[in-house]
Image (cartoon, rainbow, N blue to C red):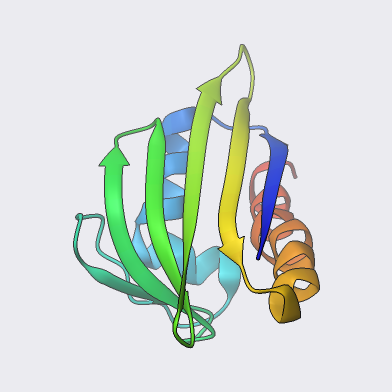
Length: 124
């Protein structure tokens, strides 16, 4: 099993980034795909029309999102922390317990699909 830790800089407030990450309509806008999401601990979620799915664990408005992502019988923990700066938000991503056979795909997905799409949304 592997882990990922990355940092991303988005030209938006923590409130706007948090909204983009937790509001189902906003998720569908920046992913361009169907999503199921409710920002409440214990709820199931899916993104990219079911390609990513799991359970929401914890929310701290405008600061923190914790989720469990599922890979067959493996549970992977995802933590996203939002840190306010003057004109942007620093995003700290950590994902633990990633199966070796999906690591490259997940790593690229965070950079290109997930945060690449968010950077396109906010940094235009």
